[in-house]
Image (cartoon, rainbow over all chains, first blue to last red):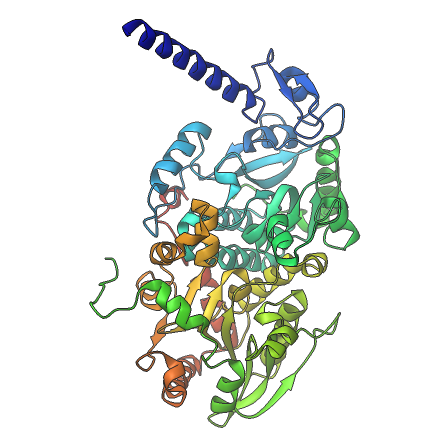
Length: 299
Length: 279
């Protein structure tokens, strides 16, 4: 009897470690420095080494799928090397509606990502043009927007106004942070008010839509850019495809709400591949040089 | 700190049902009761007329105001013609057009919110639903004329907020205001839409809770059993709220109103950000 029990226990532990290994392998983002492991493309399922992914800016060498990337990686591939200086790293949200389990979940996400919440930003340069850059990091709560994102967005925008810097935002978000109730909805009005203030200051606001940008983020600051770019294949929209499918009761056409669709429907200016993004941003900044000529960006 | 639940207090989901009740007055009744000589105005001047948003000009106690709100319709035929009060981008653009017009002619804007959300459809998405909502949020935030918003029924998601950025935000006692419906909330967070009552309790979506949370500015009392039981009496309370707000806002120059509203929304629903100390 005891033997049988031991046997079962062994099987169970074997199974558990197998599951854990599998879960580790399936974990989304490629980690730089961990170049031996292989990662499958989420679109075409072809497998490439982490080193190859990194070299290719996390774009699938086979099908061109743009893998979602963390804020840190985004800053690394967009800004001039060593130029990034993070601002307001400690803005943390609370638990405004006392939603059960929410503080534990945010705690875990903070531990896992090293971020205080999903908005990550600071100062940097692109081909020596100074900018204030911010990224909604989809590795933290799917880049959703709660009070911490709204508050930090306002702080970053005010910093950009104060320092006379162009504002560059990479959006990727599942929308409002449901666990914060109406507090999360109000962040839409808050971030829009911040962009209202930024517009009045005469600053240049660039938005890059990355996959996916939906809901409350899409319907607030992300859709208020002077110039709106998008990575190829990014899902961009207010209502998510699942909700629309339920409402209209039919399948959605191929490519619906993707970057190409949004370009055709007049919602974005240009689709830019990841490898060309820095160059295009640099071009935009150069074309707005007159706006920033002679301004002291130091503070 | 939490809402003091009185013994005879309604449950949150009971208020959701009251807010959605077909017998509850809709924007047409509010207009006929509160605004004289009302002239409805139509169209976004770009693509089409969206009847889910109703707007126009009328007199409130003798002074011209612009009134804009969601229109769900009172019977199935009307429901269909105004898309159950769920606006597409054209509805939001119409509302913005009327707001800018009000600003030009120095009329206050009164908005009445009652929607289950912006319309999640293919056409709405194709025509720029996100941008239409976003532009409304931004422009309402800096309109140089008084803006008073009243949640009369169901204030749900970005579709409600797109008409709800205001100097004074009121809620009727049994109105609800939330990031999404309790059914949607339960289905997303608990994968079980059946837990809607529990979700409604959790979400803090009732007028009193939101007043406590500082997300709305006032609660308009309703007659026992809801405004649908005695619309005349309830409307008088709404009239008082509008009058009080306009009296408070009158005399503040447009620029100053816009500046104060911008400040209000830059700091609404904020955490006590430790990062601010470093600035």
